[in-house]
Image (cartoon, rainbow, N blue to C red; front, side, top):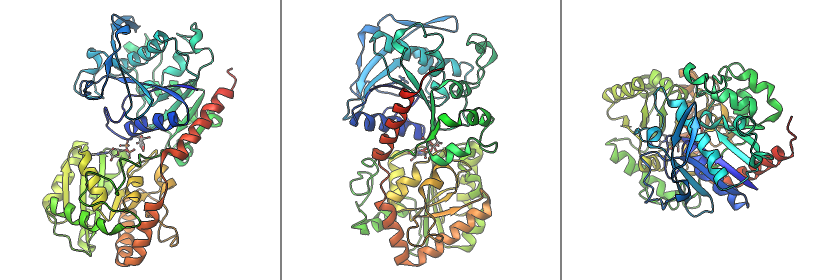
Length: 471
Ligand code: ADP
Ligand code: GLC
């Protein structure tokens, strides 16, 4: 089976969030199942082509595509995802992708990714490579399902191709400015266009697949999603169990595992020391690693932080960046509680590992969460997640008080400050019972969140798409 996977970010080259983790892992898992994958993404100026072993694909010298009445030249770089057979093609167009940022607020933001999609099609044409599946991800690549049926319908290369759209986050839709819409067959919303035209739609957890068909979570597209309900699946993301493995993690102080969990204590001490926090053994150390965006619900934490700290022995370690109001909110909170709240504003991969290893619990109060990866990393690191019951969080965490025999964390049902505070209090109580806590840690660490399950489910979806006749 030939699959062309098109994405706007991918680990290890460029990452702002979970989409990059998935783009770097799912194609590799599929290729281990015998699928032939070509992965296409932009060459942003932050990507060092030579460090990643890319070579210039000379056959693209002097090539261009015509987009919105403009001829746009580009180059292509060719390589492989590490230790895999997945072929990677980087679309090199300085005008669009050398602005220092992956996503911009520029007026040509949508045009940048429209261009990427035409270039992706041109790459397949250049190699006369007929994909069974074109796999688009989020709004940045959501026009591909329609493009292969309209503008490129003349090309037999795509005659039997089926398209899949993965929705990693429904809130970002790619609204097309009017000047551009006129040149794009009147498309006004990229994600909506993909939802209407993809042969199948997949989102990244079963619960989110149900939620997005409701008014509350549908972001204005629930009507379209309901109308495509038969073609919509939810497949829980896997996680990279090599990169996130406490037994071999090069970023942490002392390795540990479910069988030999002792080392976690040293990581805890090292983390507290790094942040200059005096927390004793009875204090629950709660980690947060997040984009600071409304989605993530961190304002709920800021709303009850003073109360929680006054009432319970809790210490927070927070890593993240984004929304300036939230950044300032956490800076101010640290000034008020310098001994109870450690803060790093920024993006830091190695520190993210040290927090997962050193914290006792991990907080994700997301208002919505299509899948979420950190709750899975947390369980693997014996760090009990405290989560709002939504999307992938609801699908991966089992509440310890409700299910004493198989609980792995703490869940609250309403995205409200008091509900979150109550879950934190329950975690503090459970933490006092060392045996109970240790058993929950062990259960989480033994869970299998690898891509093995997910990639098989993806293969099934591809097969179903191929078996589907086209109207
Ligand atoms: P989303 O994609 O919505 O941000 P996910 O949970 O799917 O949420 O993925 C977030 C990914 O980004 C995780 O791998 C997480 O560790 C990482 N991450 C987020 N913020 C930071 C940060 N400030 N520093 C390091 N890693 C971060
Ligand atoms: C999005 C979602 C996140 C999901 C990730 C990967 O960024 O916000 O929940 O885990 O995509 O699918």
